[in-house]
Length: 600
Ligand code: C2O
Ligand code: CU
Ligand code: CU
Image (tube, rainbow, N blue to C red; front, top):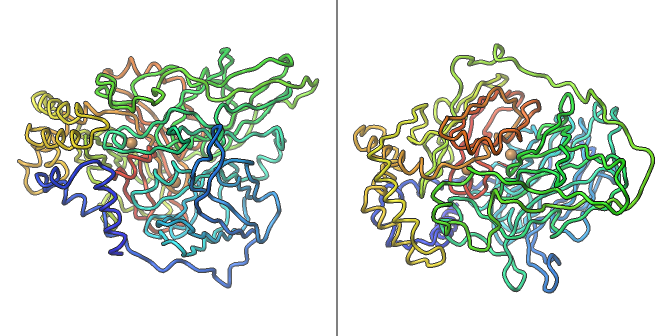
């Protein structure tokens, strides 16, 4: 435990680009940092003799190298797997990709997965989207050291859908995902099988990620605080681990299973010729009926099931899936100063290609799109345990604070409202709480805003690449009042109203300046979206994304735009224990924008 503690502390200090000197003036911040540790070190779970798996495989996390760009190979971290029991379709490799194998499971199967940590750092794997017991969910408390093996055993309870498996170690999730540790996990069931949707070569996984390469084709990752505050953005879009991805299709219908596996980048997916997208499913599986959208927003962690019909298109024609123009997801400051995003990064919200479909074969028949896809078991508000009192998920962001409900992640730090009775259905409200208090207050004091702004400018103005300048900037902020605000905010000084209040006003100012979109993810069962509302101030930006949300499906990750308030209904059935909720901008997650619910 102490080695892990030292490890993450040291890592934070180096990665943040701030020296100890800069921290010395910020006792509140140091205190908050200490609070982020204390993850227990447990003995890894072993196979239980009474569990009789239908499917068993070994899953290895290891270093490797793959050819991505022409020339030198790229060092990566990757999942590889070996099937021990079960149908051979359970695992399919994506040839030449750093991505982990596609995992295919059937609802009702009993699954055992032996996770081998062959890395040189701790890791653990989470099954994003699966409804499994708390101790099988890959919570960071189950992180294993190099050389250790962790055994997962669970029964597949989910309906058909596309899920993700990826690391979830304390404070290093983003870095490990970025270096290649991620894969798609499909669940199949009878409801889906009856539809006879395009399958085999007509069903194509599309895992979208962005990466930044150096001249030697090696991956560059976040080097300073700015990269982590906004999330890290690359200059190349990869699909299934390949640049300039193309699929060759016949002139018929396909099923595209799309996953945003980027650490931070948000896409607005649309076909280049204006053909609308026919959406048949989202995170939690099939919609009840197909929905036709001009474009679809896809944030990190979200999935999309698309019916892409190339019927009637000529041989040799092509259709390009692009990310279209949009605005408002990054802090205004970032735009104004320009320098906040890495100079080579592909700007978020600009228009660029993601992949190309080329029609290479003319065929005469094609399956028909079913008008009824599935039946979803909706939970009306009246069935929730708290119809009048939504459980809060307050987002607050500032130059050095990424919080949920006013607090950075800390193990075993459950607030009263974070305790949930098992087998209840909860109404929840996700909102921007710039006060950082976790309450519903959206306090903003004009005077504080100005001070916060000043402080921020001081902090942000200094070099992206110049570590020393960056440190000084943050120090400068500390002296100007913005920093004071932040320290107050980080300290969670509940007893001292006055200093807490000042802190929050400072945070309020910076929070506004920093306001950005956050994809909020909740572990465990999928939720339904009840309503979304956005403040008038954000209307213009919101207009560039608003037609890209799908509300009529089950979700486990929802993009919350600046000024937006999203109400959801989520069941907490079957399993007790710790289930996380966090921002799936993985840089934010690692900075502490994560909390636990304790289901009891
Ligand atoms: Cu995909 Cu807790 O994460
Ligand atoms: Cu998850
Ligand atoms: Cu976030």
